[in-house]
Structures are given as C-alpha cells and as structure tokens.
Image (cartoon, rainbow, N blue to C red; front, side, top):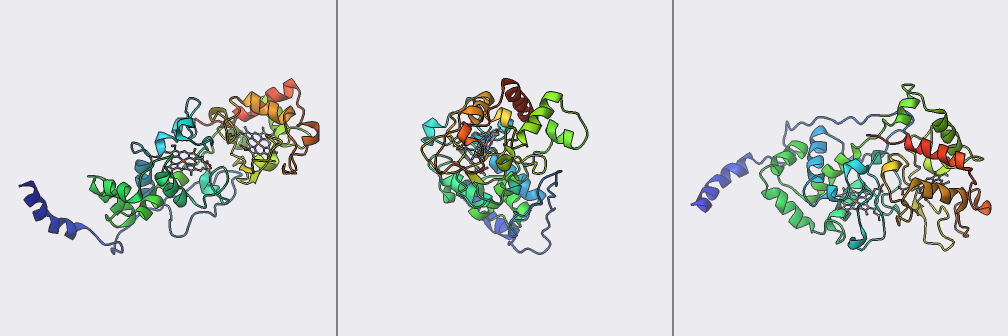
Length: 315
Ligand code: HEC
Ligand code: HEC
C-alpha cells in the first residue's frame, strides 16, 4: 500500500522539483557588516555569494547532530571549551575559533593548509577524526529528510542536493560569524572608556619596547587581532614548523592555548612571551626580544596586558 502510494506521488514530486536554472528563483543578498578598522573584504568566492537563504540553511547544517557544532561550540568562540578533549580523536591540534573568517585570505587550519571554507567543510565531513562519513552518505540523509530539499531549493534553486551545495551553505554560515562588539570595539567607537590598567595594557600590546605583540596579532589599525599569517613564535628550541597566529578576540574563553594546548591560562601565555621564548634559527625575526628570552614584563605590566586582552571578549 505504502509503496503504491509513493509511486503514485512520484510524478507529482518530480513535477514540483524545479531545475537549477529555474527562471524567477530569487534569493535575498546577505550583507556582511564592515566593522571599524577591519580590512576590506576580498575573500568571498564569486561562485558563492552570500544570501539570507544560504546562511539559514548553512546554520541548520552546522548545528545538526554530529555535525560541526559537536566540536565548534558558540559559547566558546566556536571552540571546544576548557573541558573539551580532542585526545581521543588522535589529533595533537587544539581548536581554532570560527570568527571573522570572511576576512581570512591566507589559508585555514593551524598550518594554513586548507585553501577555502568550502574545502574545509569537505575536509571536516570526511576526516576520520572529525565527522567521518562520506559525502554520498551525508547527502543521502539530507535528501531523504522532510525539510532539507525545500531549504536547498530556497537557497540554490534546486531540491536535488549535492555535496558542493552543502559546502557552499556551511561556508556562507561560517562567513556570517562576525565578531566586532567587544568592550574594546565599543571603546574604538567612542561608546565606553577603558580603565587605566586596560589602556596601559593596550599600549604595551602595540609598542615594540613594550610587549611587542602587534606585528603578528594586529591592534587598533587591524582590529581582526591577527594577520592570519604563519610564524614561529619560539615555543621550542627544536623546530616544529610555523603555525598560524590565531586571532586574540575572545582569547579569554578559548583555552587551552597554542596548537598543542600546552598553556591553560593567559598568565602562562604571558609568562612565556615575557621570559620563556626559545631561540632557534627558524624563529620569526618579529620576535625581537628573543636574545633576552622575551619581552621582560614586570608583574604590573603582565596584569595590564591581561586586562587589555580581556577587553577583547564578546558575549
Ligand atoms: C571532531 C571535532 C571537529 C569537528 C566535528 C569539526 N571541526 Fe573544524 N576544527 C577542528 C579542529 C581540531 C581544528 C583545528 C584544525 C587544525 O588545524 O589542525 C578545526 C578547524 C576548523 C577551521 C579552521 C579555522 C581557522 O581559523 O583556520 C574551520 C573553518 C572549521 N574547523 C570548520 C568546521 C566545519 C564547517 C565543520 C563541520 C562541517 C567542522 N569544522 C567540524 C575540529 C572539528
Ligand atoms: C612573531 C609573531 C608573534 C608575536 C610577536 C606574538 N605572537 Fe602570539 N602567537 C603567534 C603564533 C604563531 C601563535 C601560535 C603558535 C603555536 O601554536 O605554535 C601565537 C599564539 C598566541 C596565543 C594563543 C592563541 C590560541 O588561540 O591558542 C596567545 C594568547 C598569544 N599568541 C598572545 C600573544 C601576546 C600577548 C603577544 C605579545 C606579548 C604575542 N602573542 C606575540 C605569533 C606571535
């Protein structure tokens, strides 16, 4: 009976399935904001413009059970959080925050090895240590659901799902994650004052004779708080390669720190830059104070630097 009913419905379904280039399919452009002191965006691929419908679909896919949000938690700047444990996944790499990636032009992952957000979706879905499925199975499940075919139709003008569209939708959602409303942003916009301690910390951050952080992690004129480039920052005297300088936005809530999670508090990170920097011939020339073992901050200066870093957190 059921089968017969299904067969009877089939022609109707096919008839209502509209082709990709359907005339009259419209979407609403999704406008990304251009926050103060952010570079101009030039990394949105021409073949994946952002639309309200695409972002909505991507968000739903991101938060599906066993999908991206099982590791990338919004309350921890889209990282795993302090109690998260990646060890049983067999990877030594800690998480990276998924914020302001629409402005990333230089590769994703700690080694910058993934070229685009679309490619990262493919990598995450197929990686045995991440979602660990194949794209065919992933698409089949969506195609059989009650809701997804229609959402794909709204976003892309076709209810025939293929993995390229999954990549596009999730990439659009991740690009929509703009963070530009921390206390420090409100200070830049003239809406709040920073305390004297926070201001002193900011001055240390952006001066070479101070804590000398800004060359790699940005500052007032680069409010992404990262260059998105790879460096060796002198964690070890043995060379393990260059790693991405992560954004310092939300840094207070993204412990553990560094690609291998070796530091658990910002105090430990600041102590490292102050007096724990290791020389190797590969260390970045921007680590100007390596011959003194670091930037040599007093306890007061360390507290000021930390107070400033805490102003970069956003609810
Ligand atoms: C099992 C946990 C896990 C899952 C599930 C997961 N990720 Fe990740 N993600 C990570 C880890 C760990 C990294 C850091 C990777 C590295 O460089 O080694 C990362 C890095 C990323 C980055 C790079 C960020 C940057 O600044 O370079 C993006 C983008 C990303 N993930 C998106 C996704 C998307 C989209 C999904 C769902 C399709 C997903 N991830 C699913 C663990 C996960
Ligand atoms: C030469 C470039 C460079 C300079 C200068 C620099 N950093 Fe970094 N920073 C990096 C790199 C690269 C990493 C990631 C290193 C790794 O994991 O191997 C990093 C990581 C960090 C992290 C951990 C981020 C995370 O999400 O795990 C913090 C916090 C940090 N830096 C703060 C600072 C502060 C504060 C200063 C100034 C005292 C500073 N950095 C100076 C390049 C730099």
